[in-house]
Length: 285
Image (cartoon, rainbow, N blue to C red):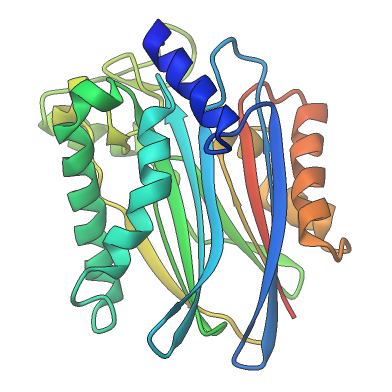
């Protein structure tokens, strides 16, 4: 990261706009007679660069609808792209004219528009990029999840962990990457990377790799009924060392979602995760 980027990050931390070593919080809302509570926790990894994870966890009234907005943005090669996503992605989604009539298509268009804006601002935002997983809870009943990259959403139904997002790994999308003129290599290191550089096949930003990368999200709509207990959104700093079921089992008996999110991050560290970790836990009651 450039010296100017580090100074900007320190200014954001001082202003309360960027996470430093760790950050935690919680909130709650009542939707259609159901109580929804969330908690979050961010923890800087052991790398030498500043924290590159950002998140959104808030409630918003939009017309007659009560929305829960939850998102994890895991940056690489800098924190400016995930910071941009934190402040713009949900607004872009909800401002799509056809969001209420065709949510999946609206989210795809909003992700594409947001990526175009990031690329236009490459001089300002730098050469880095970010993965993303977002969840929009509508009136406590409908859950719309979208993701690009390897940040993940997992719902727990009657104690069973069900993954709602798709891990976009280079090996699984090798043909698409090669058709665009790129390649997938395990060198350097032992992790498959696009053009030997990026360990995910889809991401926001990454201008130098964009010809070979996709910013097309996978989108899934779920109904939140009485079988749904909780939702976990987290960056890959958690999922590298914990399975979906391990994460659910670790917190299913913890009532406070903020304590649950912190516990997951601490469990990941205990399992030798060295990456930045960001985690949101949403409890349905």
